[in-house]
Length: 289
Image (cartoon, rainbow, N blue to C red):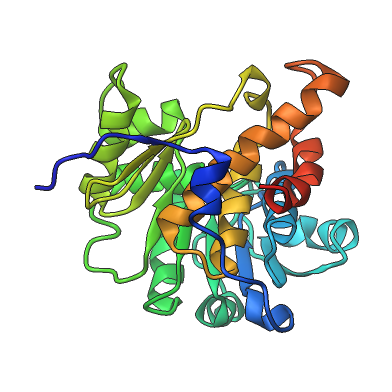
């Protein structure tokens, strides 16, 4: 088993020395991001993740959400292709997703799964179907209930070739670990990375299965607001769409997420800004690194 290296602090200079792929060509060259989420009662989570992906530089956005919310989201995000998915009586995305979603998953350059999903068992079924349909090299970002589904079936990713990034908060990390996280979140991020053979972004700590590690130190309390995690996973997916490799995308996303909050603090206070306002700062934050 590899050992964890000392964490490298993510600074603007570290990122400048690790530049994102140069955005050349048309929108197709910057990737198609497919966000799968959005139950009847939480469609905004998929909206936040999707728009954040565009702000991070993705070329095209597709949103797959419950049928009852698809029309409203297509108006709210006119830049996106929005498809409706069957839903349960409780308003959750049904796991037995239709073939048209599997076709989109097979053609997408990045999959972001979890924002706004709200049923563990339906999500487990959905993950199996979608990951089976996705390209073998298609990066996948798992967040929210997708992480809950993974915690119920730890071998779900075993044998799959897709590069995966997990973006748990501390509660989701507890489910993935099967115990309370210890104080050293760097070690916990590395344990998750090795256990699930994925890049992990946990509360500013980024770890890879081969032992590389980074730490983002710009975050403040204001990021602990509803929808903030959806924004972070969307930024990450957008950077993957641009061609960043998973660890690079995770580091840049953590920095862009945190510094976007810093930019809002003078106007709204440390804890008064909203996740939707974070989204509007993302492109400028990335551009000015």
